[in-house]
Image 1 (spheres, rainbow, N blue to C red):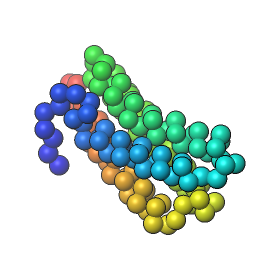
Image 2 (cartoon, rainbow, N blue to C red; image 1 turned 135 degrees about the vertical axis):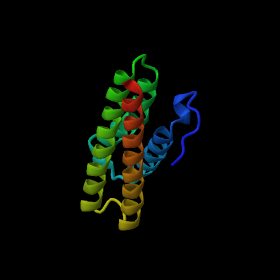
Image 3 (cartoon, rainbow, N blue to C red; image 1 turned 90 degrees about the horizontal axis):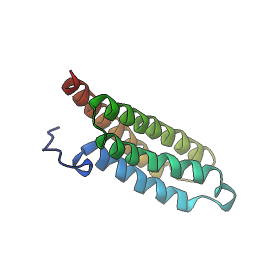
Image 4 (tube, one colour; image 1 turned 60 degrees about the vertical axis):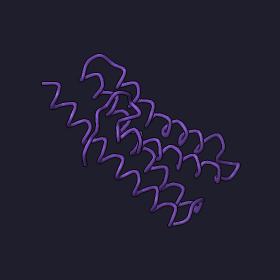
Length: 125
């Protein structure tokens, strides 16, 4: 994967994938039954927002290590979304096709974010 110049957090490939993950997660949230409105939906919404927001916040920090810290928080939120997807699948709130599609996107987002973190670590030294 090649990376172009990063002039804004929107240029970060991991942010782009996290954004798509957030959008897709919001699509699932809209399909949840009303009894999940304040529990599962709220947890999923916070995790989805955290994915993109922490990459953006890390980009705005002065030091590489601070950026890495926020990227790791974003990474944790991506894994949290995976757990919520499992819950949605277990409770038959989503189809296997939707589950697989978002799961694959989350894996790609995590791998790309891991690459960005390695890039930051390399430049921090």
